[in-house]
Image 1 (cartoon, one colour):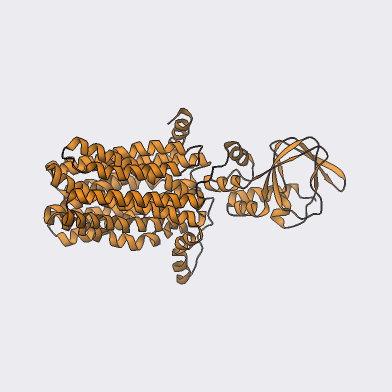
Image 2 (cartoon, rainbow, N blue to C red):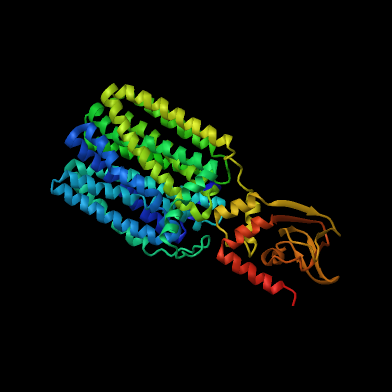
Length: 543
């Protein structure tokens, strides 16, 4: 990560609200990874790889079904409250799981564990929707995703490592009890968040049928946007490998290394370390748009790591290989998350992440079951070779399709983004909205004497003045001038009336022109921008 990108990441990481969000998210990631490993160790000790694989599937089934609908809460209600309540529910369900383990009631353990997995689905979709709220520019959005990734992957490293240490002297029940306390602390941190939610209207009272229809908003958006759809599929393929690796850690540790649950924890910690490296590498997206190199690198790291495990029977090389797995995961998760946030409509962003979360849960379950079947039927080395070939090909094909659909477009130049955010009307827009608007700006140059807008004509553009000087006349009388840094044209667009003045170039000028539809979509979707624009229009309107 070069100095300029590190500076952006550091500035974003120090934001007080984001710091609170990330601190609670570290607790979440720690508990999720440690508890997941603990329940798989619990199942493996009871019934071997077969029971571990089946339990992994059973744990995830409720989450698969509920994730797209649970995410609706993040779009309709205040996301920070949904986040805090999700953490509270997760902590309570972990306490219930620990109690069932201590009581030696395996069916109750698996049922409570399924509730734990379901509670997890409230977190990532809401986090995906929160980051654009706290990000002012496209670069800030990438940095926020990098910081979130680092927070999650630190938790992914510390969680399995802590689980390994606890399992050496204790039981899976102890792991769940510790995790419940950690998540409870995260709930306290997130409960004090107060986000300014400019990009969505306040929740409306709608009937039950309307609620059900709105829950499917993410699926409808994915049907409309092909690039988002393929990104969700790529994330799902990454989740398939995560499901494989969850069971593989335990299986490989027992069958090849002979160290039991403690070694599985070390492999999980290696995965977390690699994911941190991947998140740091993903910071290269700051100031760039090319998602494809990151997606290709993720696919190659994943495929090569499976082949590398063939024949390994020592702990250190195995941990190094899982570090490579983690790097692929970090690159994939952050690059696809940024891609979805850049292209998704704000109003359904949490629900799109909810669909993605549900698909990930389904493919994680499939991956857990798949590796169990392959290992039991073909042996460990053959299973690894098949997994390497299939995941590598699948991820590369998905990445190629994303490029064919035109999803890897360049980001707007930073100077255009800066100029957009300097305008009082547009200053309240957030990262994705700014990027979409800046992408569609048309650069207009004009010479002295050229008329930009004429009094009485219909309005079709809003103009930002980058350089030069313009005169404003009404009825042939000069009433003012507009200099660099100013803007004009909002009255006709907001009020749907003819132009109220003529604007003529006094010197050579450079303008950024925003179309009527783009301007109205951006401004009317953000209450503070609309209020500012309306006040300016009122002040400038002829009396």
